[in-house]
Length: 413
Image 1 (cartoon, rainbow, N blue to C red):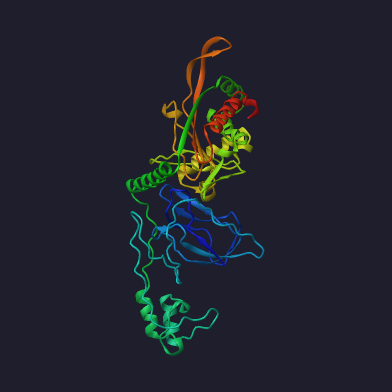
Image 2 (cartoon, rainbow, N blue to C red):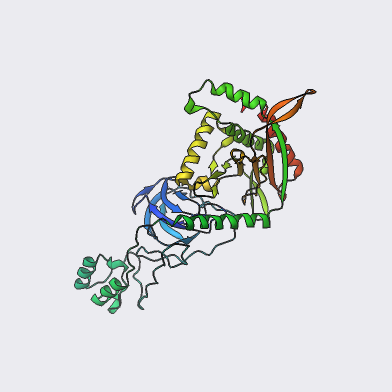
């Protein structure tokens, strides 16, 4: 059996709240299938299963308390021969997990998060030996009838009669001590949710600046060729399929990592761990405030039209609160742009445990000398925030040089 745990959907996540199950006990689960929705401080996230098998038991009902990362939510029986991956996680300070609850399905008694309902007190248990798995529960006929009338499963009641037999008094006691039904989850007031998001971001950024020795580099890139190529390409496309300049920047940023792979990966257990895949985390501002940076998987391998579709879809789902857990845990580098807000340069803070962050400002026209002649060119300031434990300024400079070179040949992106 495998415990399905409250996932860690980002380095700044310490707790979450289960909102919905998409599977019932006894139903088959395909690896990578979305089986639940978890509310974090930033968004509601569709959580995918990291193992194929059958859902055996649900341990936490929807709409309950905020639970620490690592709390068991359900039990899955893996398929024979199925490879089970460890659930996605980040190198973050450990958070104590709540004890695994016993049936019936109840929310473990843990401290509630802001705005969450107060957890029900633990149910006192009479002193008696538990029934062994598979053993028939001894229960008197009248007690069995009363349990059925009250909607109780006799197998979950601890008997105090001879040999652990369940009596009528045991059934009545279990009925009195049964937690009240969990009310449907009510959205927290917007102000509370915004505050929780700010708290989560503050914790991650404070950790980043405390633990990561940042270095910062910047360069100005001539976008004349890139924008001219973009205008020509868009003239041949329907309006709904036209590309944005930001997509060229994302693709070039991803491709440049092939030349300087040391920037693509994580700092875990005291050492840099490179990632073979390039999953670009794109910073997206949310309408209620705050931001998320979900991943575009394999960004370096996507053709520009497909990359444009992925970006559009990701922004829409991020703001609608329907991101997937793999999108929140997989980014190997973060790309951010504040150009549309009028900012000309962004020197960002690395999102741990990643090793780097790339920033773009707005495209501006500046005097620019080419072959001894000065003219006005559209340029953008590209910056790199790097983790000095994993790389140095020389490697960072090579990355920015590769980024510039790639944007001078937009037809090859």
